[in-house]
Figure 1: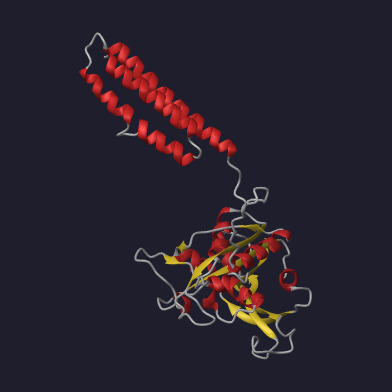
Figure 2: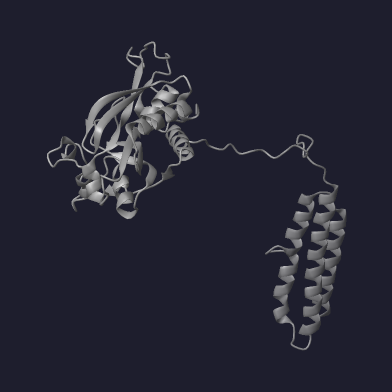
Length: 338
């Protein structure tokens, strides 16, 4: 017993002396490993305690635990002592602010969509949303689209086996809102659409639209023209002009298409506008009475206008992008410009 107690006390004395002489953290770590490591001096002495008689074991155990605890406490104190003496690296200015992590920016499509929605909100529109998977009724029938209309063909629309389809426009949101809400209605509907287009510089199978609907008493075509003109000025500048042309859509009557004057050449004619001075945006018109009938609105009492525009087309105009596919390729060299 005396021999084992003596060995613990000697190990403690040598360890404490070595720690007092340690001049750096590595030296302290070496002492810790030598005396307290898995194969160190103190653990090896603990293994010898099995040979001690039961009567002697309490004294030996007490000495062993004191040795281990004192060495560990001395190791911790030595680390703290050296840490206080250590000075910051001369090559690092600790007073400098922390390094900022770069943050990403909005995708140009998201930028245009958010800016457009903000403009319409300032005009009193609220945002409405609907599902990407639509019924044929909401996407076509309720919008007065004939059964033989080309847009309903499988070559133009993505149909699912259960009869549903990927919506070809955001107009179904108008139907869903009017089915659930009595007039007046003033909504704008941003969202994704899908068509079986062959991808090229100006077409994509997946694209985005912003649809607008205003229903109230005595709404006129003049109200529609004023809203679209104000939108053009807010989005592209006061110098932009708006041109309206007669057209046909199944869900509006009368129908029209509208163009913005080319912001690249100021309307003088250039490559972007094909020397016409105008850039086609999308279509609009007064809501057809047949659409009101489908949702239970009285077309004798209520009137309204609807409009829609392609977000990618506006983004291409706004940022002078020549190929729509650049907006989807996730090329950081392209996206960092925005």
